[in-house]
Length: 222
Ligand SMILES: *Cc1c(COP(=O)(O)O)cnc(C)c1O
Image (cartoon, rainbow, N blue to C red; front, side, top):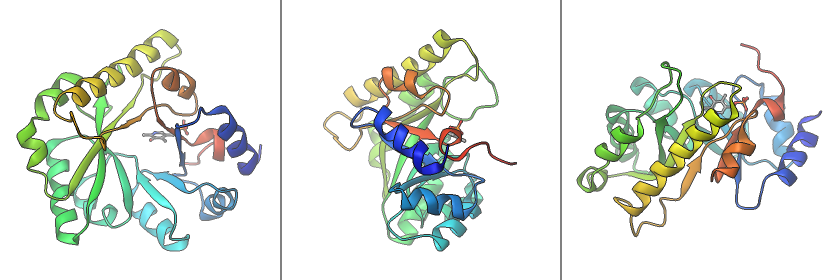
């Protein structure tokens, strides 16, 4: 399927209110251009330098979402371009992003990354770690960063019930934070979960932002 046909099919399959992040990592600028021409404006990238060079080559009205593991030494490359960073996976990274946003004189929106999958290599906070870490004092100490939701990746397994359970854990953690430290903060509203193979389950479990690459752009070449 062509990029524009895939985007159209996804557009009609996704319920209203679910935002599509077109994950374009490792794909050439021409592929992103094709998606742009088909109307897509939100792109997800997982490498700092790749995002910066694509941002320089493509129109300004694109919203760049950073979705990969972000090393603190790459924060300076990402902050000027990212309209949303999905992958805050440690206290140190949150501090680094906040310091850089302050230095740049801009505000940055971020999602806190949850680790719910059974794979040990995945980055992020466990639900307990995150709810303990995000105290009111911690959130208020941020000077240039707005935490607007959570992001997570389900286990990479065929077992649909396991995937569903992972998404449910992300959703429940969001609800706990929303009723707690983010009570009265409408900007805390995003649940980013679901990829090409599992987004229907994610949406059924409450995702309002999905990150889809392969279904749109085809297989990536590493
Ligand atoms: C690559 C990636 C995706 C997209 O995966 P597909 O299976 O190609 O849809 C989504 N989220 C994250 C964090 C990724 O790294």
